[in-house]
Image (cartoon, rainbow, N blue to C red; front, side, top):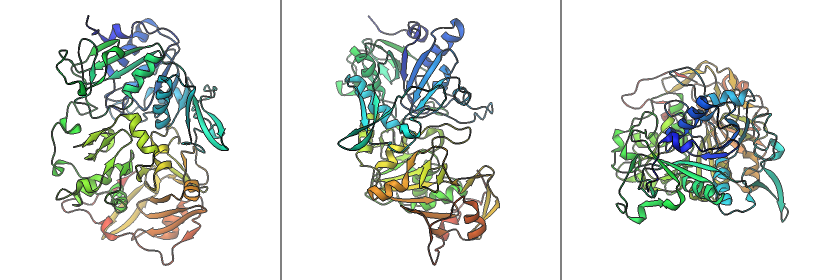
Length: 533
């Protein structure tokens, strides 16, 4: 008997109080049809109620692919635990995701875990262990001393605990059962055997299914098509059908927002690098230029979401990948694509022309094992104690994503971002930078709103090397504070740098070098542009 059902039938049996887990990576591999059906069932019938949702990472983009926003409804959602949240302003509506409103207004119990913990925790659920133990995140907002990952006042249960083993402080995530797992693959046969042959990521899909089955739960898989049994080699089938209860076909599902289907994301075809659009010349481009100077051949680099994502595109445009040298600069992201070039914006996480794909848990094994020696990450705040924040600031509550795992385990870190934000306007003329209008919000603050990673502690205790790269200044992170080591041509030290910080650097290089003028020169064919942040 075929396991194929429609989406409405697949979600019809989910009871009140259940724990429902799903995964996507922004828009990629998001089982949007099934999540949408669950949201519609609640709207039409008022059931199920009081569900706990577990998302290892931000699922959907809350725009073209709604993902977790489909189920962000009071009454339906009692609790959410997620490795990251999606927080963009929808350009079509001007609104932020409904899930952000529920969090800001304390309508639900909201918890944020580092993505590495959320994925590795699934392995412990699947093998019925007491829970997940890690040193990653000690001293961060996931540490009970700093909130334990609680993002709303309603979130009162201690889902993360501090423990000691042989005198070392560690974080412990107790396991609990998953009743329903909703995942997405490329194809299934009548028996539910799943393959991901034309998806650019797998993430924690397999781990979710095993965790649900070990808990006595059900697995619902959304796929693009059904295929005949025995039509695929066994090596292509990543999840046996014995672990899949129902299959929902959505023949028209998008790869991600604005990408219906592009084989280059799983190397079904190879795009020439010349076909990729280079970042426009702007303040963000200046930052990417400077960060690119820190990338070394032969050292596995990992790129995070935001300002750092443009770095490989800059390297491609400036010829560092010419004559087959792309593989001289091995690169990945937190979601498991290796090789090729990661894309920016809402196509982040998948790489054009990848060489290999790891599932999410295996990728975080590599990250936590320190195999990604160089990390380029973005930042929202940095404080006088040497701590960085990307997880919670103002009305934005994105969580950490993979930041904590990446930053804590890399040998070299570069934090990239504008010096201020909120109305910043700058221009470049004659190879010099001029700040026209300063941003309203400072990013170098006395105390961060949320501790995502204590950078100075990593420098002091584990010998990490850390830089902060902005459009106007470059700092080295020392155990005792920041050292200003470069300043942009055209920038005035007191007015544009020191007076825009809530704390002073502990050291300023003397003489203070200028950032390379080449970073402030538009590439041939690109016009000078203003930047507004």
